[in-house]
Image 1 (cartoon, rainbow, N blue to C red):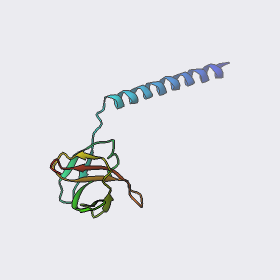
Image 2: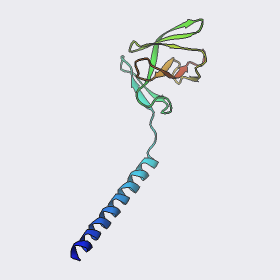
Image 3: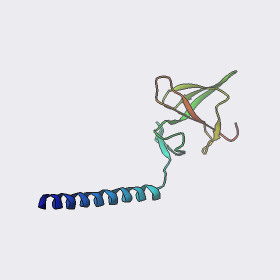
Image 4: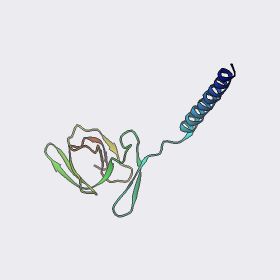
Length: 120
């Protein structure tokens, strides 16, 4: 009988501890701000305004060169990646007056977001 009572006591303590841990974690997550992704350029400057909805894993990059083609834009990022962006891709306004492109890290990267200067 003593073993069963001891087992129930330990199980109840573990249940209470686990419940408190989950509640504490959830409350910290609820009040923590959703910080934007920060990109560090080769020149040492940073871009910290990328929104999480398209730039969650370091997949946004400032564009160093852009070429207009008849069927879209050819963008080369500061780290040397070149991507074709078709004109149907939704563009958002850039916060620093420069072009930026966000893309996945697959072998054939998919463009997630494009940020363009207000004057474009």
